[in-house]
Length: 218
Ligand code: GRF
Image 1 (cartoon, rainbow, N blue to C red):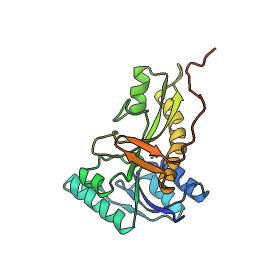
Image 2 (cartoon, protein in one colour):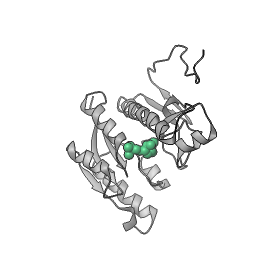
Image 3 (tube, protein in one colour):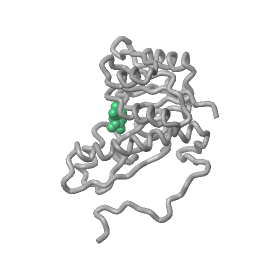
Image 4 (tube, rainbow, N blue to C red):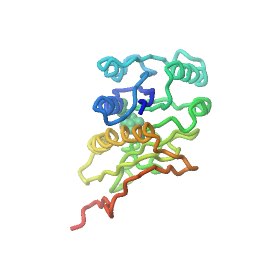
């Protein structure tokens, strides 16, 4: 199988980028990162790319008059590198309809909550303050609305009484690092069919009667 050419968009530390790099290098995901694009020159993610010999480009959003112009440059860069799947990994800009339409059904995002609960910023804090006992993370296909497109994969984690935003965020992030590479793998293996809001996964493995209950049943 030819590796799927992907592009990863980042703004920060890039721990999800690292998880994807590691999964590719270990041979778990048949993909190839053609380019990492950061809108912030100081992003730690850029060092991670360099350490693994992956090409990166900085496109500072502040240098563009409009979101559309910034997005056009990003799309152009992705196309030049032959990217077929775009992964937003801690990318802190909203993307325009033009960008979404340039890669229909081929842009993924990771969100630190079980969507549709707690979209938007500070999802971990929102979940903690709401008092949910279970939260988690979601990898979804990006559409024109924020944190909204069809869901590819989710992981649930418990929220404990002693949790802080930091502790619950760490628990969620560890799961992001497991599910994001898996989502890329499903695309790379051609096992994803998007049917309206629902995604059908070819040869899906089913969990037999397993549920996360929190607090645990006594
Ligand atoms: C994660 O919490 C992710 O859910 C959110 O941004 C953070 C990215 O962290 N979209 P990193 O840059 O991948 O470490």
